[in-house]
View (cartoon, rainbow, N blue to C red):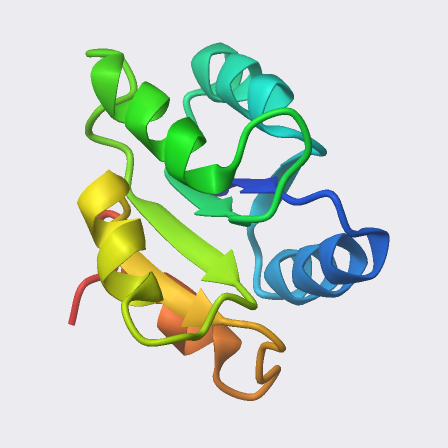
Length: 125
């Protein structure tokens, strides 16, 4: 069975590129376009991994991560911030909100899969 990745992203181009790369890599991708939808979809599909943009409509990615972590059914799902926020302290802020990892945009298509797979359950090492 394919591992499921939830990508919470409001930018269509980013959504298309990341979905294309992940599907080509053999993953099933579910997409949400805002934080509320992302939280609801995470509860419905229980993905193996969540990729989370930080700049989202309705609620930012930090708030989304904190809400996901506060739900016992979703708290163990790895969350990776996928964001153009790349200033000093942004990585730490994402980790403090509950993210397990941090990938800067624009992504590098050549190394993106390796970065993602570091966080997938059963894919360590």
